[in-house]
Image (cartoon, rainbow, N blue to C red):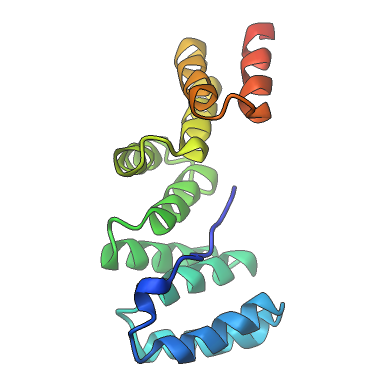
Length: 166
């Protein structure tokens, strides 16, 4: 399961909390996860409406194995910014990968495609879900869509080949 840390955070640059958050994010980037976790917990406690921090706290909790807290923070991030593709993707990946909630995950993946109809990662994961469910023709449609967008995409090529052999 892929998890994402939001990288394009320029819209937060005018927020007075942003410089403090950047220091915490640097701890994470430097591999100081314990320190980043402690600082981020305090930051979120003081700033519960800061969606980026909620999401990234979810990522950190996931990485240390506290999946209940991870889920709560992913959900909170999506509640705060329901159109944020990164937050939606984290929540959908969690629902699918950790909880096996295919229907819930699919709703979110389809929302992601409504936000960006060239989201290769989302087409791939939907194709993978269709393949797991035995819906080979549906899976092929999604993998072929990836190849329309990125004709060089080896993952889509390999997945199509695997479907043909199965």
